[in-house]
Image (cartoon, rainbow, N blue to C red; front, side, top):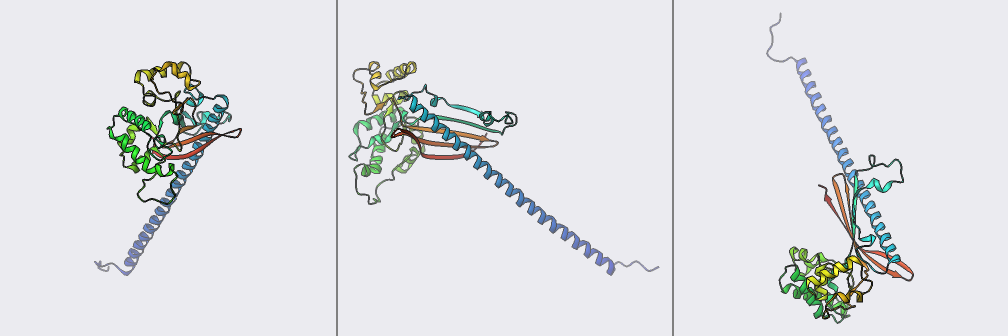
Length: 327
């Protein structure tokens, strides 16, 4: 019998090398396979997210078209706009499959986990900051007083209204006065939306405080007596809160057909100017929200309703989408 050698034989060395090589190959194959699986999984997730985003956009686009139809039909049936009309009724969150009742296979149990909600609001229920700048490019004193009363309602300092008016004159004054179109480096950027007041140096807290009462529309507009809240009516008509509340109670029973219909419910010194107030609106804000699984997409659109000959057009001025995480 040969004595046992403490050193591995050549054959054992070859076996050990082969085993080590096999383990390296297995590890390499497993790593490559895991990388391929991860890439495939990542591509599937990206594709699913993109498909979900596209489908959500289509659904919200259909909701905007639906709001166009509602506003167009409202203009055909009524010459005034008030909070008792169908467009003013909000759509509570409802499962998307409930809108597909024509398909028998689309039941509430088998439909997609998608929920839609939305509202149509009168943009002329708020005070339009465009009214602050007159045709001569200067601030209108009476409109600055209206804004001062709204700033006081919002709990802002006295100088906010004057500073805001000065900033808007700097931004819009040259355009209103038909000044040359040459660029002016010292002129402020012209805000197109309320959030753009930050361009004039106003912080987010000030903009948030003004948001319920003011807005920025593409042109000068009148405040709708049938839809404006108490605070806006009080500021525009220069009356106390009690008188404004009485107007709300009167219009709740019967909407004002004309501006003069509100005069018997106001004191004699109230400023019921047809150039400032009306009973119909042309601008509406459409808000839609789609909740799909753990994703939520919101869209806000400013719609302009106008007559084009005998046709009623409802055009989207601007649209904004914001993805959010659903709770």
